[in-house]
Length: 487
Length: 92
Image (tube, rainbow over all chains, first blue to last red; front, side, top):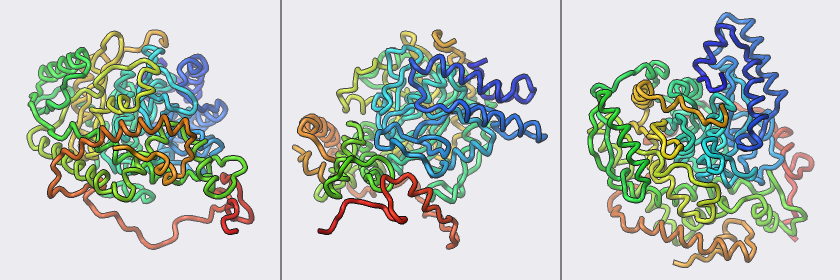
């Protein structure tokens, strides 16, 4: 049962075969058994989880219709503010921080009857691709515990892959949902920018950040996104008139007849793992067998995406993270000499190296004399990257690419070389710059490690992503494979 | 280009030890060296894109929607007194 989908668990709850308290106990026991090794969760409150499960069972007993996620255990990344228990963003600087309010998506999950099982590990402030920069220590990949789970939502990915929870939430600024989903053999969806409110999600790069689900199958991602999406008056970037979608209905698609899939040549390049490439090529052949037409396309500015991202994201981060000043919340250094010393030492002691690197990079790009050459230049390139996609979508319905050029790498392998680490996001970053929706799903294995295929759709067409991914999933069994050590 | 790490760190209000500055300097230079490739992209006449949305920000009615939560918000501050945030003396 632990590896069941949310959909299956929901049916069993609805048929009274299990209670929310049974499920909560089951997953808490698995967390107790495996978390010491995986370090997927950084905060668990057993009593609070059981109390939520009991409240859900009581609700079910008292009402004719259960709520959409009634009694289903969901884990959330430590970046979501939750009123109950700590929120750390896996940074030392937020030690002792208890959020005074819930993130909008947390409110939505609670209103839908979900049982929140705990906070998951992540790269500090979501800055990383391996969950090694966490102040709580690195998280491990259940498929090979000497390897990283991807990042920055690596804790959520590892937790779902090892069935310590049936589903989890992540956030995605440059690939932080899709890349760990790919490296851990899961489905991960980054919705269109503006689909889900960012209120109460600790900000990294505000024009790129978006929350989304990480699940064991496509329909579960649809279930969660259906609950989380929609306008929130508290976030002016959550779009008011976004086209609505039949989230669950979109998952009934079983073939790809008439679907035109774009295959961008810039995503099948020298330097990527040859076996990963072959796995994606195979998956695309399966899509053809399901009725799709594969169309060769070009996204000519892809090569500049990583460079543009590593100007724009750090610039926004340097502004967003200026709030951690040791005055209103978070950590303050001992015995500050003066106000400047208070700022400088609190931030030195509180931030880890990767966060410092990004703040410094962003401060440089925004500083007098460099602003036009770096920040404005990167924003112009961002326009070109979006135009590439708009032009491609005149010829095709969807774009398919590898999610990551490589499978999960060994812990420590890239930790000392920030630039090499940055390049592991090469296939996911352009999507955030353009604000598009994208989904990663498992499509094979290389040496026992999962490989993910990324689908990219025009803005607001998540139904198209879910349809194609459901058709592929129904014809394959990759999503039903689980790491042996955790069965 | 050689970036002046100490100056940037001062602008960022982050103290760097000598050891940190020695380590971060070359790393930042390698990142900036990579970013330098942007200069090769022809962006003549291309508008800068600050945000994925073309639409204007939505407006709401000008009414008070939040309540006074000073106590809850100050409970998480490092040091407060009489409803104010306390910092080291700024004016001699």
